[in-house]
Length: 273
Image (cartoon, rainbow, N blue to C red; front, side, top):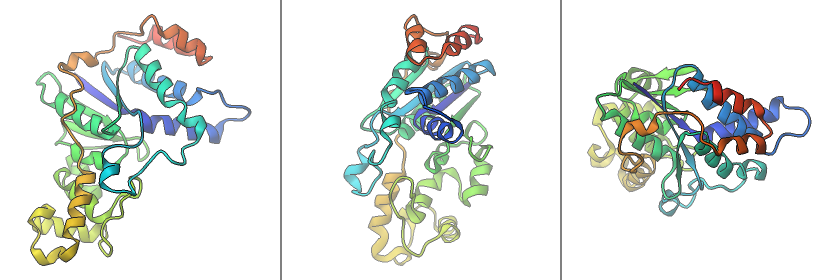
């Protein structure tokens, strides 16, 4: 089987801002959430059987306690923010496994789910549908891959090395040195992508750098590495068969009405199980 893991928060943002660009007139209040449901249904229609969606139920996580400038929910459009919980509830009603994260982030859930699924010998491949750089650390050979919708690429281990100059196991170290503006930490001044890759390929992880390589910036680099390291111990499921989609629940028709989208009901009824 192939297990598909979807970043629901990213998909909601993608639908919301994509619809703002192409939509004329007044948008539907839950239009972005409905768009995510259609996107997930398309995956089932094209062959997906086992799928889970991770969401940031709240944007903030334990990382905000480690670094005060870490990303927050400040500045998110209210019309987008109020669709977070309805998306989670509608996906659940559609019969999809959903992991709303509070202390951890959606990326931690994706990393945990990828690790759990990859341990099962019945799983042929794990596809992580997310663009975030930090998720490249989850890639393992051709077995766990990252599907980057924006770049239209399926990135295996060789693809990670081609993009970043280092293997998946060094992605947290790489991001610690160069920073991740999307997550709100700057990296170390004066160290760009090429320099970071060169240092990591020469010395290995930051813990193995010689004392004079980073000087008094070593502790900050280790802090940023902690921010960039995804947690893989979230207890999301005990059996990968829990991710098998068997169709919508009895609660789903009410959601299609609430979203004013009858096509959702029709597609979900016809999608292969």
